[in-house]
Image (tube, rainbow, N blue to C red; front, side, top):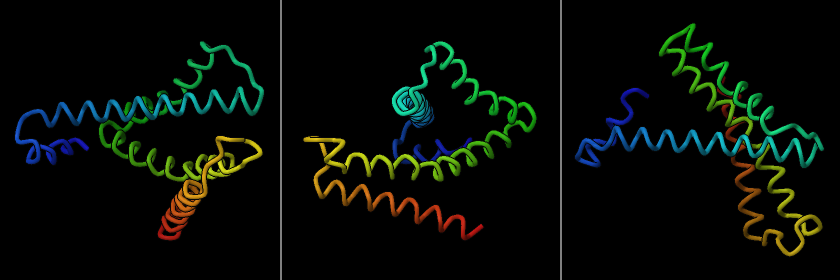
Length: 144
């Protein structure tokens, strides 16, 4: 990860590669954080009818996100950060079907979505992606 920005240098032919790489990592992290926070809020409030003050929710979710990272980096240093990054991506890949399958199911339901229901093409694509993602996860598990 430390040298990944060097792959962009030949393409861009200037010194902007490290800056662009850093900005893209920052944007990806912000996107992931925002998506996770909003998803958690919607699930807690919408499906579980669990009301928590916004400040308490922010403290809890951010603590759950950052405290394990700080501990791992404090104990293991830079190598622990790389290992933690790879581990987090593996965990996210296994969590993805638990978001995609309900999303495909709910958005394909005329009863729930009314006039906003997915058309047949979007439904086929959504379920195909859910099957592909799940299949890749099963393959990953079988290779361990």
